[in-house]
Amino acid sequence: DQQVKQNSPSLSVQEGRISILNCDYTNSMFDYFLWYKKYPAEGPTFLISISSIKDKNEDGRFTVFLNKSAKHLSLHIVPSQPGDSAVYFCAAREQGAQKLVFGQGTRLTINP
Amino acid sequence: DTAVSQTPKYLVTQMGNDKSIKCEQNLGHDTMYWYKQDSKKFLKIMFSYNNKELIINETVPNRFSPKSPDKAHLNLHINSLELGDSAVYFCASSLLSGGNEQFFGPGTRLTVL
Image 1 (spheres, chains in turn yellow, orange):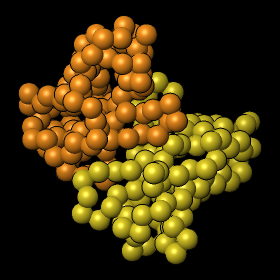
Image 2 (cartoon, helix red, strand yellow):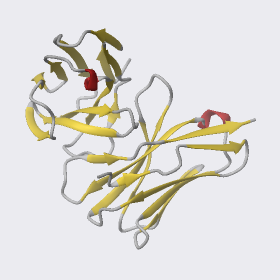
Image 3 (tube, chains in turn purple, green):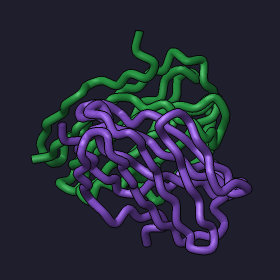
Image 4 (cartoon, chains in turn orange, red):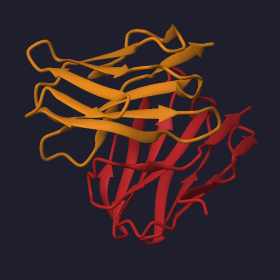
């Protein structure tokens, strides 16, 4: 039973446009959400996070939106750059828990 | 200087063998983790150690045994390897237990023939 799902395995976006990556979760006890970025042959690296008490967090070109009622979060990248081409993982942590639960990732390709 | 390193990067072995994957972090973090990325690409936690003490042990076969000689190292030993163990294994660390920001190693791709 996968509690965090990224239903789009891949996404292709033109350079300079907005990339929107989506993530859905089922566990209402999740209180913290993160996005990780992964290049080939490397481990995931932390990108941005959001607490459940917020509905938006922005860091430069990256913004994460949280819709608790829909159990949905999204990562917006604008403007998209070729270096953004990577696999993006959504992750969530249950309140008081020690572990992160990851989705299966979305491969983002930015076309020049 | 690599923050979280794993060796080997690739491991190809026969069914039934025993193998180990080593992990070291130089970030001074208290907590280390092992994750398995399966064929469906989900990253699933296997174990977590905090200051050499096991704090998370997910439903993982007994053939998998983590060992933490000190808080900078967390090794994974796998006995009697099976075909289904083929996966990419990632080590990670965080400053605090359950730490939100985890730093990952580059992964070890294990192939069991």
